[in-house]
Image (tube, rainbow, N blue to C red; front, side, top):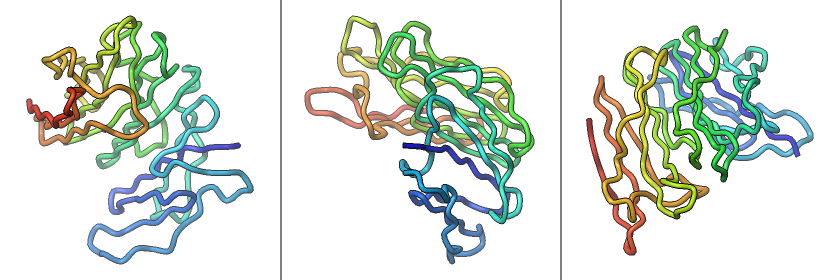
Length: 226
């Protein structure tokens, strides 16, 4: 089985991933273009929105409304066993966040940034807690120079408790700060690792707005803002 990750960006287009196919909608229109097959081969492609190939994360971009795409770029070439990428764009800024070594204490959260619409990429930056099990990134939220990445992390390798974490950059992804845990109750801090997103974050200027599902006996939705 062969899986791929395709990340596409244009300042005038919103891109939607439809399984093996791709469709775009213009910002001033509600009419969708015809699907564009990104995979276009005999292998199985799955996981809409983003996909992974082997143990690395790859990126392609279009600067002409999806007519053509840049050559594939491996943003995780120095990071082995990379999984579950998440992408977002703001103008010419492109962010790809992912994690490595899922399900182990060697797991880490990474982000790579392009400042020129995917023409070139910076080296991956580790933003998670070393020695912990970091879950896949739920959201990359951007507003101007400000970026928030949210995920959950196992509090200790010997416990089943998880907490909600956010890393923040105020300078277009050049440097990152791990914010204090959003989970105030360790035993019900966040949902354990799951195949679906149980948290989300949005950004407006330097403010982050986070919502997540806790792990109480009767789970609740919690909210926090900065």
